[in-house]
Length: 360
Image (tube, rainbow, N blue to C red; front, side):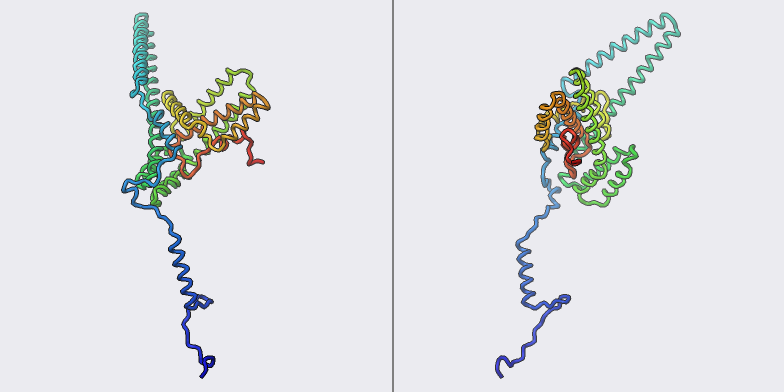
């Protein structure tokens, strides 16, 4: 029997749905899969690195600037420096002088009439009571500012180290910070629910930022935009330079206090000095680079405005400075760092200074 007349030998094959896969095709597919598996190796994070004290990455430059500014202002103790000793001693001396003066006044009133003396003593007691309440409120406000600044640093460290235990503890503290604000009730419930389910510390901090802190960021952005617009308009039409300076300073003070109030740490008198010190330190550290990608827009926009009108250029520049103060206050007053969300720039909070391209 010749070769063409021989019957073909039986062969084995596999049915893959409606397709017939022969042994040659199956071997070729296995070889291709083996090549892809050996050529594409995806790196995986070491889950035991935080336990060994290794951090996947350090803090970025902007976050280090924020923490440095907080330590120079909000976390700085008055009695540590010679300046603190000076002001404390001076305040004590003035208080003794005021108390001695009140004592002489009450004694003179008693010498004239028992009724006048009693009235003077009651008024002095009311003054002391009000002063004690104000002092207690000042101390409480400063303690709250310190608590927010420490919470910011702790959350940044927990996210950097991907520490689940620390992230859960700090987020419970963050929720307690806003427990007296009904508008944050739903967000706080979501964060507490996430803390029970999420097992990754970095993702837990990111979810808390998106749900709880992001609405506060939107309020702060609106305040910065409104203050920048007011400053730009008023300084453009104001006839006196002294009025410009006073108005810009008043708006900057109001803006810093308002942003601190939004994030839960409205300062008193002494607390405002610490907040202003932190904002000034942040502005000094970041400088012009903190403006980011809008630096060129600011220079070009101010140059065009200056060519059109000197007053208009001055108004735009004052609006830019007010926005920068607001962004620095936002960075140091925020209870957690910018992680999932990008830090806003001047063009984000005050697009009207450059021309809002989104409306074009």
